[in-house]
Length: 308
Image (cartoon, rainbow, N blue to C red):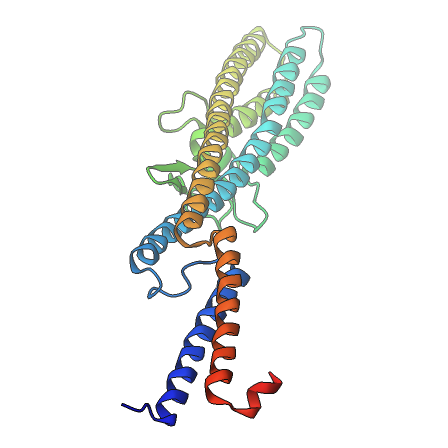
């Protein structure tokens, strides 16, 4: 049976087309460093790669959340870092005010200094982050945490503690209640710093004339000193908690980085090419294509291929 010229041409052309397509695909795999270009190349590997990619994206989002949590906690720590020496200065002023040789004018001068401390404390309690959100207002981040009153300050936030998901099974508080820190409300063991300072200022501005006045001054200074001690302990407790959370974030970062490396390796195993195999296949396909072209020229006698 004779094979028609058309069938011979079509078979040769089809063969070269298949070889050229395979060669192009190998070249694309090499240029992208991917073995699986479409799900059709390896449906199982493509599906598994999608799962791994999604898991890696979630893991990377946890990393972003941890960075945001760290930034927020460091801002809170920065504000409280200013509160500790402020309270220590108040204690020093209390000791100085207890000097029996001081005059009313001397104590009034100390009271003036303490008014400045009270303003400074209010500024720290109303600290904001880089976006203008108040750190100690709970969920009411657009509202200043405290407003000055005749008796000290009034809390304007709520008891909410903002949280971020920093790992698959870990939600972390990234803020602390302003009223718990500065006013000792809730489970905190401190005292109302603003009231303590305002009461101390009022005490020092009162003239000391009688023995009763002297006794009242001594008792008031002792009360203020005890309250400041409790407030300092409370601040240190909160700062220790912040430090523990920052350390935990560092540990979670290490775990998350290791997990990300493993995800990257898994993806490489699933979809990336073996360079040695791919280049060997490329050379083989080029040789096969050239051989098919020569065979086609030989069998067809087409003058066009004499110039290829």
